[in-house]
Length: 171
Image: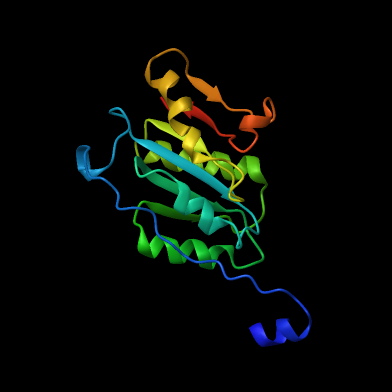
């Protein structure tokens, strides 16, 4: 396959697959906690085979569940998700059998997070456009009881245009 693509003049880019760091086992049931709370990340994905791996490996170790919602991708997104899920049992593959859109994928992820007893769920796009380093800044006001929902906007300031996440408390 690679040689056929190269003959057609296409550029081949190898993407290394690097698993997340070892997950700390510090909470009840052996789950990692962030300031005493079980945090999940919902990742809606549609045709993200090239970037989904980078998205997964960047998610912090304090996240105890990553709900990868494949919204009926037509590329190899599911194969990449399945590979990572075999390496990291915090990754929960969820697959829509028909494309329902990003909103439905997020709702599916939220429902799974609630079923699994997660305290807080964040959404991060499958195309690695959201910087997970900002998660604590968005989680802290929720945990401190200052609000039930936070949302980052990467478009407000040029310095932060690379970081955009939003979270909600699941109660």
